[in-house]
Length: 186
Image (cartoon, rainbow, N blue to C red):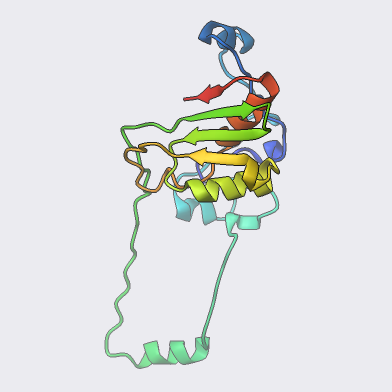
């Protein structure tokens, strides 16, 4: 629930810029050093039970009560009867900590475009370069797979966080063709 974009920002165009020097990039940002999202901030709840409580701030306006999935299987009456007949019933609340993998080696990406061949190359710290190539080529940038190469050098630690396709990978790949030079994100 934490860190989600406000519902008003969903589908909004978010800024990306390229600059040859850090000073150029910093000069392009507003004086605050940040970019405001449409709709402003939204109240957030960190505790899952509190997020499901009546009146809790909504993560998405079209998901009443913040409950997106409620699954039941089996025969409720049979299960209730089995519990009623049980000699002892134990109730236990389990709380799983949020797992946030934090590798010492950060994520990074470099996109290159070869204007002679029309080929793109993405160097990225991914645990899953083949899926990145499929997703980015077929669904994000619509680049044929035979014109897109994804290279995953020594990734270092990942712990699952480097298995997904991130927007920065697509942005540097796309931007490299626009500016006709390699684009790096770190």
